[in-house]
Amino acid sequence: MPILLAQVEDSFFRWDWVFDHLDDIWEKVVEHLVLTGIALGVGLAISLALSIVALRWRRTYAPITWTTGALYTIPSLALFAFFVPITGFTTLTAEIGLVSYTLLILIRNIVAGIDGVDPAIREAALGMGYGRRRLFLEIELPLALPVIIAGLRIAAVTTIGLVTVTALIGQGGVGFFILRGLNRFFSTEIVLGTGLSVLLAVIVDLALLFAERALTPWSRRRRIA
Amino acid sequence: MISLDGVTKQFPGATTTAVTELSLDVAEGEVVVLVGPSGCGKTTTLKMVNRLIEPSAGTITVAGEDVMTVPAHALRRTIGYVIQQIGLFPHRTIADNIATVPRLLGWDKTRIDDRIEELIALVDLEPEMRNRYPAELSGGQRQRVGVARALAADPPVMLMDEPFGAVDPIVRARLQDELLDLQAGLRKTIVLVTHDIDEAIKLGDRVAILNVGGVLEQYAPPYEILRHPANSFVEDFLGTDRGLKRLSLIRIGEVPLERGPVVAPDATASEARAVMARHGTDWIGVADGDHLLGWAPGESIADDVPVGAGPLRPFTARLGAGDSLREALDEIITTETHVAPVFGEHEQFLGMLTTAQVGEQISG
Image (tube, rainbow over all chains, first blue to last red):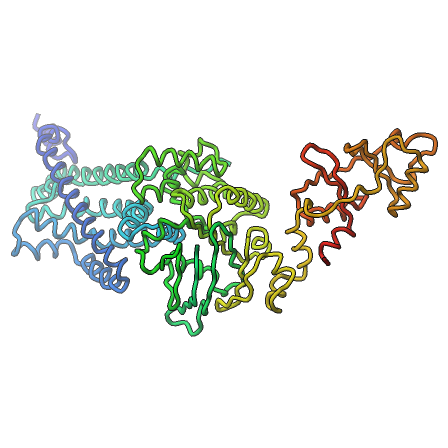
């Protein structure tokens, strides 16, 4: 049945290929999540540090956003390519780029979140004898959490999309399938890689949304008149 | 307990001083109210006591210790602080909010728990409020939590910055009364800031009237200020109803009462008319000993029956010795009989107040 066989090979999406490669797919999904997780974790840590600096010394806020904004404008392809001669086709090269792209969004949201804390709350805390550090950790940061997580969600969705680009430097998570599909003119892999990337973005976004709900029980309880 | 000596505050970039050479002593257990128009530095003065603002010159001592020699956070943990916006922590339950200072001081858990329970009862909140969040409470309840939180570590000194400014007048009056009740038991040293002279008169053992630039115009007990304003600024600030304000400071119990135009129920019409004539009224009150039965208009008194047998109208007001003359005056001018009957704790009739008696208190 040569005709039928040709139809299978030409079909836009071949489920049988997917089922034959479940192990590969799972491996790439995990890689994708690890790359994203490291990027967000390291990005959040650097952003928190830079935000503390920006909040403590206001004059540094403009240069910090200017620098991270400039990083954000560099085309991802160019950024990954730039570091290959220095750090090679490694996870490190991928993460340098991925982390860079999270900074602007995260710093802006952290600073905006902390600035948004009601000054009366800060005054009451200081007036009762809070020190700067405890004020930040116990009062300002928890109250800024909804805004910070909103930033984290944008950063997560952006990063999950960008991870596919790192396929070009031998990383890429599910981006690996997109790149190989393009090279082999095999649409199943392109669709699979794209679909999985979108699905991961949606799942991670929802997970962060639920995390926010779980972490801020006070923000949804209102007085029953 | 608190002493300000030549305190001046000039904010950076300002051409004038916010507080100028201010000296003020607050005795232990006393409520001092700082009052004045906006720009008079009353809040700045308050915040210099717990060092949220640091003075440019002069010294402030609390319990004999110069506040500048104590670390700011340690100082503030020994001073209760209540602000108008309350500043409850929205992410913490009522219990956790109240526990703020005890936790900063490192109290153990059972001691904190016991204290929370005690304070919730003290400020008249329901025990089940413990686990609510501030957003679930009414404005008045939040203000009570704010006071409970300030009292948590039992500080000897309390600073209150317009504590009742954000609630409606009815709740404000109730919270003021509650504060006075609390204070009667706790005897804290309280410095309270307000722009409302009536609040100052009601709450203050002494009132400090400040002018723009933090200039102290007068510092005296409320009745003294009302009776002898130090200058025209104070006079203007007190307003034109100074006499009425003084009435709000005098309790009915401090004034001698008259029995008024009152006869026994078995009095005859002619006896009643004689009493009315003596008092110059057109009505007659009827009382059986210390039980005030009511009153009847003069023209309705029948000649052939005792006064107590005819129809009587009730006295509606129930004023007691603890109410103020201002309330009595309100009663006098809004009722048909133009008197304010006063009753004791067990509803026994003590006597009456008339405009003439109230007037004597203002002029005297």
